[in-house]
Structure formats: C-alpha cells, structure tokens
Length: 199
Image (cartoon, rainbow, N blue to C red; front, side, top):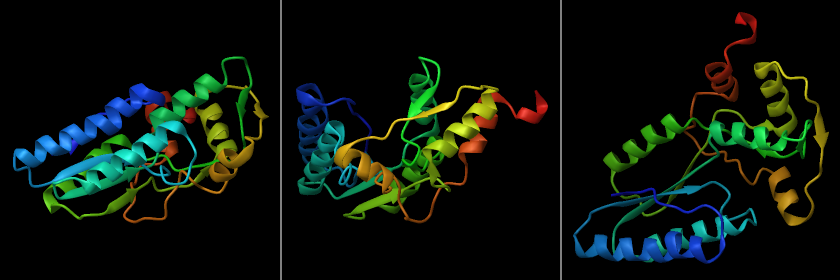
C-alpha cells in the first residue's frame, strides 16, 4: 500500500491528516492484512525546523510503530516546487532569497518510478532517501531560471536567520544517498521554458 496523503502547512489541520490520519490508515491496513505500507516523506524532516516537517516526521514514527511492515521514502524537492517558489519570490520584482541555501531537485516522475521499485521490493523496515543528481546553491538555481525565462530580474540576497537558515545553508534539504535521479534542474527548465538557444 502506497500512502501519499498529506496536508502541507502545519498546526492542527496538518496533524489531523498527517499524523492521526496515518495512524488510522496503519491500523486499518493491519486489520486488512496489508503486507507492506510505503510512506512518502521529505528529505530534511529530521533536521529542518519547519512545522510541516515536524508533522511528517511524526507520521513516519507512526508508520514505524504500526502493525504493518513498512518503508519510508524521503524525497528531495520537486523542480516544479522550486519553480513555483522562485515565481513567488519574484512577485515584487527582484528574486528574494538566501543565495547559499542548498537544494537538490528531483524529478517527480523519477520519484514515482522509485516508489514502484520499492513496492515491488517489499518492506525494508527503514528509511530510504532519494534526491536529484545535483546539489545547487540557490543563487545558481536562480541564475539558470532567469536565463531559461529570458528574465533580467536580479537576485536580492536575503539571509535566512536562525537555525532554519543554518540548516538550509548546511544542506538540510539534500542527501548523499544513492541511487539518485538523472534529470537535472536544467532539464526541467528546458522542458518548461524551451532551450534559450532555440528561442
């Protein structure tokens, strides 16, 4: 059984869906004789202090303590998410962000293929991580994004404070796990906006 349900955000609504909902699902799966529960999570839930990540980590713990043999796959961020983030960060003109934050975009279709492999393999009773082929600094990702979109919007550096900033700059959203995906941020940009040399 593949568990994909989630409510991004934080607080009580996320807790009801991600933690309590996962507990109900795990118990129901146990009563139904399900042989494998595969839960999809996010690289960094155990390191990056984001409220939503705390709920995802709690849901992982529910799966691990439940009655069904299990696997957790933590994936890095999808390129479409990074793309949306950059659009939101540039609403006022310049692209706002911490240049030294590290990201490792992984193609969502490759994550789906990895999930299919894990379902076929059977329960591992552990956590696996899966990331994209490249770790990028935020400023490099912005540079490539601007070129792909033909944009001249500058990056306005805004250093993230506190533990959150430290973890993101230290690679809290990245993983050294292998195997990795193959499709790069540049591949996503070319598919989405076309190659600059062909415009």
